Image 1 (cartoon, helix red, strand yellow):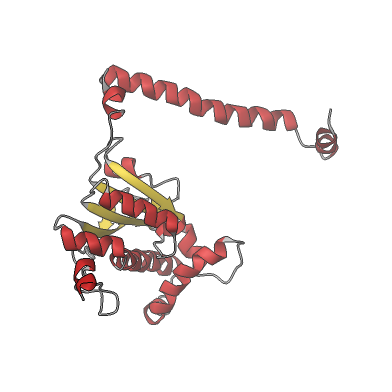
Image 2 (tube, rainbow, N blue to C red):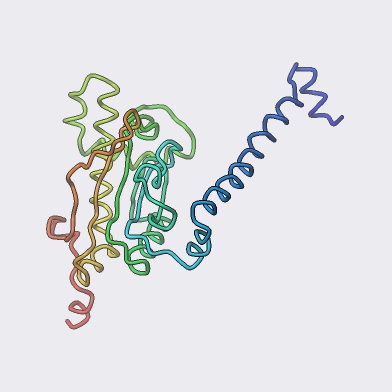
Length: 239
Protein backbone atom coordinates (compact mmCIF):
# COMPACT_ATOMS: atom_id res chain seq x y z
CA UNK A 1 0.00 0.00 0.00
CA UNK A 2 1.49 3.37 -1.01
CA UNK A 3 1.56 6.57 1.08
CA UNK A 4 -1.47 8.05 -0.70
CA UNK A 5 -3.54 4.95 0.00
CA UNK A 6 -2.42 4.99 3.66
CA UNK A 7 -3.37 8.67 3.97
CA UNK A 8 -6.76 8.15 2.32
CA UNK A 9 -7.46 5.16 4.53
CA UNK A 10 -6.71 7.22 7.63
CA UNK A 11 -9.05 9.95 6.37
CA UNK A 12 -11.83 7.44 5.86
CA UNK A 13 -11.74 7.63 2.06
CA UNK A 14 -12.75 4.42 0.28
CA UNK A 15 -10.19 4.45 -2.54
CA UNK A 16 -11.27 1.07 -3.90
CA UNK A 17 -14.84 2.27 -4.48
CA UNK A 18 -13.56 5.44 -6.13
CA UNK A 19 -11.28 3.45 -8.43
CA UNK A 20 -14.09 1.06 -9.36
CA UNK A 21 -16.44 3.98 -10.12
CA UNK A 22 -13.80 5.60 -12.31
CA UNK A 23 -13.21 2.39 -14.21
CA UNK A 24 -16.94 1.85 -14.67
CA UNK A 25 -17.54 5.30 -16.17
CA UNK A 26 -14.55 4.90 -18.49
CA UNK A 27 -15.44 1.37 -19.59
CA UNK A 28 -19.02 2.50 -20.22
CA UNK A 29 -17.74 4.82 -22.97
CA UNK A 30 -16.00 1.94 -24.75
CA UNK A 31 -19.05 -0.28 -24.36
CA UNK A 32 -21.30 2.46 -25.73
CA UNK A 33 -18.97 2.88 -28.71
CA UNK A 34 -19.18 -0.81 -29.57
CA UNK A 35 -22.96 -0.73 -29.31
CA UNK A 36 -23.17 2.44 -31.42
CA UNK A 37 -21.00 0.90 -34.15
CA UNK A 38 -23.09 -2.28 -34.16
CA UNK A 39 -26.32 -0.27 -34.42
CA UNK A 40 -24.99 1.86 -37.28
CA UNK A 41 -23.73 -1.14 -39.22
CA UNK A 42 -27.06 -2.91 -38.73
CA UNK A 43 -28.90 0.13 -40.12
CA UNK A 44 -26.44 0.65 -42.95
CA UNK A 45 -23.62 -1.85 -43.56
CA UNK A 46 -21.77 0.78 -45.63
CA UNK A 47 -22.14 3.60 -43.08
CA UNK A 48 -18.50 3.78 -41.97
CA UNK A 49 -17.14 3.00 -45.41
CA UNK A 50 -18.99 6.04 -46.77
CA UNK A 51 -18.08 8.18 -43.76
CA UNK A 52 -14.38 7.40 -44.24
CA UNK A 53 -14.48 8.77 -47.78
CA UNK A 54 -14.60 12.36 -46.55
CA UNK A 55 -16.85 15.14 -45.28
CA UNK A 56 -18.82 17.87 -46.98
CA UNK A 57 -20.70 19.71 -44.23
CA UNK A 58 -22.74 22.77 -45.11
CA UNK A 59 -22.64 24.13 -41.56
CA UNK A 60 -19.97 25.37 -39.16
CA UNK A 61 -21.29 25.32 -35.60
CA UNK A 62 -19.54 27.56 -33.05
CA UNK A 63 -21.13 26.61 -29.77
CA UNK A 64 -20.63 26.44 -26.03
CA UNK A 65 -18.63 23.61 -24.47
CA UNK A 66 -21.59 22.77 -22.21
CA UNK A 67 -22.21 19.02 -22.44
CA UNK A 68 -25.97 19.51 -22.83
CA UNK A 69 -25.87 21.21 -26.24
CA UNK A 70 -24.11 18.90 -28.74
CA UNK A 71 -24.50 20.19 -32.29
CA UNK A 72 -25.61 17.01 -34.04
CA UNK A 73 -28.24 16.09 -31.46
CA UNK A 74 -29.68 19.61 -31.29
CA UNK A 75 -29.99 19.86 -35.08
CA UNK A 76 -30.89 16.24 -35.79
CA UNK A 77 -27.94 15.87 -38.15
CA UNK A 78 -25.64 12.96 -38.89
CA UNK A 79 -21.84 12.60 -38.58
CA UNK A 80 -20.24 14.50 -41.43
CA UNK A 81 -23.00 17.11 -41.73
CA UNK A 82 -21.80 19.71 -39.19
CA UNK A 83 -18.27 21.00 -38.64
CA UNK A 84 -17.91 21.95 -34.97
CA UNK A 85 -15.93 24.33 -32.80
CA UNK A 86 -16.83 24.81 -29.14
CA UNK A 87 -15.51 26.87 -26.25
CA UNK A 88 -16.73 28.40 -23.00
CA UNK A 89 -19.74 30.61 -23.81
CA UNK A 90 -19.30 30.42 -27.62
CA UNK A 91 -16.94 33.38 -27.78
CA UNK A 92 -15.43 34.51 -31.12
CA UNK A 93 -12.49 36.88 -30.79
CA UNK A 94 -10.01 37.98 -33.44
CA UNK A 95 -7.00 36.82 -31.38
CA UNK A 96 -8.18 33.21 -30.95
CA UNK A 97 -6.08 31.31 -33.49
CA UNK A 98 -7.89 28.07 -32.67
CA UNK A 99 -11.26 29.50 -33.66
CA UNK A 100 -9.83 31.36 -36.66
CA UNK A 101 -8.15 28.21 -37.95
CA UNK A 102 -11.42 26.31 -37.75
CA UNK A 103 -13.27 29.19 -39.41
CA UNK A 104 -10.75 29.46 -42.22
CA UNK A 105 -10.82 25.73 -42.93
CA UNK A 106 -14.62 25.57 -42.81
CA UNK A 107 -15.15 28.60 -45.07
CA UNK A 108 -12.29 28.24 -47.54
CA UNK A 109 -11.73 24.49 -47.75
CA UNK A 110 -15.02 22.85 -46.81
CA UNK A 111 -16.99 25.75 -48.33
CA UNK A 112 -19.71 25.69 -45.68
CA UNK A 113 -22.79 27.75 -46.44
CA UNK A 114 -23.82 28.60 -42.89
CA UNK A 115 -21.82 29.63 -39.83
CA UNK A 116 -23.93 29.43 -36.69
CA UNK A 117 -23.01 30.91 -33.32
CA UNK A 118 -25.06 28.87 -30.86
CA UNK A 119 -25.43 29.96 -27.26
CA UNK A 120 -27.83 28.57 -24.69
CA UNK A 121 -29.97 29.95 -21.91
CA UNK A 122 -28.59 29.44 -18.41
CA UNK A 123 -25.00 29.51 -19.67
CA UNK A 124 -22.62 29.17 -16.73
CA UNK A 125 -19.90 31.16 -18.47
CA UNK A 126 -22.23 34.11 -19.03
CA UNK A 127 -23.48 33.93 -15.45
CA UNK A 128 -19.89 33.90 -14.19
CA UNK A 129 -19.07 36.94 -16.32
CA UNK A 130 -21.90 38.85 -14.62
CA UNK A 131 -20.38 38.24 -11.19
CA UNK A 132 -17.40 39.80 -9.42
CA UNK A 133 -15.94 36.45 -8.37
CA UNK A 134 -12.55 35.20 -9.44
CA UNK A 135 -12.58 31.74 -11.02
CA UNK A 136 -8.97 31.40 -12.14
CA UNK A 137 -7.42 31.57 -15.59
CA UNK A 138 -10.88 31.50 -17.16
CA UNK A 139 -11.37 35.07 -15.92
CA UNK A 140 -9.26 36.23 -18.86
CA UNK A 141 -11.67 34.49 -21.25
CA UNK A 142 -14.79 35.72 -19.46
CA UNK A 143 -13.56 39.30 -19.86
CA UNK A 144 -14.78 39.17 -23.45
CA UNK A 145 -18.31 38.58 -22.15
CA UNK A 146 -17.87 41.34 -19.58
CA UNK A 147 -17.08 43.60 -22.55
CA UNK A 148 -20.42 42.62 -24.07
CA UNK A 149 -22.08 43.56 -20.77
CA UNK A 150 -20.32 46.94 -20.86
CA UNK A 151 -21.71 47.64 -24.32
CA UNK A 152 -25.26 46.88 -23.18
CA UNK A 153 -25.10 47.90 -19.51
CA UNK A 154 -27.96 50.41 -19.78
CA UNK A 155 -30.36 47.68 -20.86
CA UNK A 156 -29.03 44.91 -18.61
CA UNK A 157 -28.92 47.01 -15.46
CA UNK A 158 -32.67 47.59 -15.77
CA UNK A 159 -33.34 43.85 -15.49
CA UNK A 160 -33.85 42.98 -11.81
CA UNK A 161 -34.40 39.24 -12.16
CA UNK A 162 -31.02 37.47 -12.14
CA UNK A 163 -32.10 34.61 -14.41
CA UNK A 164 -33.63 36.98 -16.94
CA UNK A 165 -30.49 39.13 -16.88
CA UNK A 166 -28.25 36.13 -17.59
CA UNK A 167 -30.49 34.97 -20.42
CA UNK A 168 -30.61 38.41 -22.00
CA UNK A 169 -26.81 38.62 -21.86
CA UNK A 170 -26.72 35.17 -23.48
CA UNK A 171 -28.65 36.64 -26.42
CA UNK A 172 -26.55 39.79 -26.59
CA UNK A 173 -23.37 37.75 -26.40
CA UNK A 174 -24.42 35.61 -29.37
CA UNK A 175 -25.28 38.75 -31.32
CA UNK A 176 -21.88 40.30 -30.61
CA UNK A 177 -20.07 37.10 -31.56
CA UNK A 178 -21.91 37.02 -34.89
CA UNK A 179 -20.75 40.60 -35.38
CA UNK A 180 -17.18 39.60 -34.46
CA UNK A 181 -17.20 36.81 -37.03
CA UNK A 182 -18.46 39.17 -39.72
CA UNK A 183 -15.56 41.51 -38.96
CA UNK A 184 -12.95 38.82 -39.70
CA UNK A 185 -11.04 38.97 -42.97
CA UNK A 186 -11.96 35.30 -43.47
CA UNK A 187 -15.68 35.98 -43.69
CA UNK A 188 -15.35 39.26 -45.56
CA UNK A 189 -13.03 37.85 -48.22
CA UNK A 190 -15.39 34.94 -48.69
CA UNK A 191 -18.29 37.36 -49.18
CA UNK A 192 -16.33 39.12 -51.92
CA UNK A 193 -16.12 35.85 -53.86
CA UNK A 194 -19.28 34.00 -52.84
CA UNK A 195 -22.98 34.70 -52.46
CA UNK A 196 -23.88 31.53 -50.59
CA UNK A 197 -22.38 32.18 -47.14
CA UNK A 198 -24.41 33.37 -44.16
CA UNK A 199 -23.60 33.91 -40.48
CA UNK A 200 -26.40 33.27 -37.97
CA UNK A 201 -27.06 33.62 -34.24
CA UNK A 202 -29.05 31.05 -32.28
CA UNK A 203 -29.87 30.45 -28.62
CA UNK A 204 -30.86 26.99 -27.41
CA UNK A 205 -33.48 26.64 -24.70
CA UNK A 206 -32.27 23.56 -22.84
CA UNK A 207 -35.58 23.25 -20.99
CA UNK A 208 -37.43 22.65 -24.26
CA UNK A 209 -34.65 21.65 -26.65
CA UNK A 210 -35.80 24.28 -29.13
CA UNK A 211 -33.57 26.86 -30.78
CA UNK A 212 -34.35 30.56 -31.04
CA UNK A 213 -33.13 32.32 -34.17
CA UNK A 214 -32.14 35.82 -33.01
CA UNK A 215 -32.71 37.27 -36.45
CA UNK A 216 -29.18 38.62 -36.81
CA UNK A 217 -28.19 36.67 -39.93
CA UNK A 218 -25.68 38.40 -42.20
CA UNK A 219 -24.62 37.67 -45.77
CA UNK A 220 -22.50 40.77 -46.49
CA UNK A 221 -20.35 43.36 -44.74
CA UNK A 222 -22.50 46.41 -45.43
CA UNK A 223 -23.63 46.90 -41.83
CA UNK A 224 -20.24 46.54 -40.15
CA UNK A 225 -19.26 50.18 -40.07
CA UNK A 226 -16.58 51.95 -42.04
CA UNK A 227 -13.48 50.88 -40.10
CA UNK A 228 -14.44 47.20 -40.03
CA UNK A 229 -15.33 46.74 -43.68
CA UNK A 230 -12.30 45.60 -45.66
CA UNK A 231 -11.54 46.61 -49.24
CA UNK A 232 -11.14 43.87 -51.81
CA UNK A 233 -7.58 42.52 -51.50
CA UNK A 234 -7.02 42.69 -55.27
CA UNK A 235 -8.37 46.24 -55.47
CA UNK A 236 -6.11 47.35 -52.60
CA UNK A 237 -3.04 45.84 -54.29
CA UNK A 238 -3.89 47.68 -57.52
CA UNK A 239 -3.53 51.05 -55.77
